[in-house]
Image 1: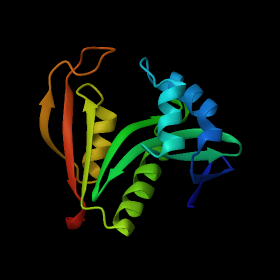
Image 2: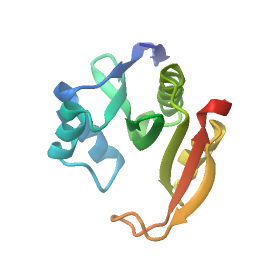
Image 3: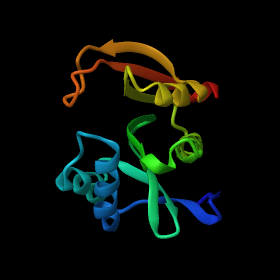
Length: 157
């Protein structure tokens, strides 16, 4: 897949599989207080309930993006980047790769939710054309924070 440089280390966007579950869980624990279980990752990666793109720099996963596809719609489930590697374009590269993949597949709509306080993520999503369409009050189990709902019309981008 696509590659990028990160402090002179070659980084590449890769499709993650069941063999990456331990690394994904370790990264997710660094990024979020509330994380998926091993069984949830297995459901997604072994049974195809969702898919994961990752950025590997050397042998280490620097970021990941979990998403699902149903018919002609895509939903972003999780996007995480190692805290020490944030603001280096990793999340942007994952988003670009996913949206290109969706366009290539003929996906028409994209969806996601994001914590109201997560202004860096909101800025990223809005820079790709996502528009806020609603709010779920006290949605997140870890903080009881509102979720902002976003849609993207991929047929228009």
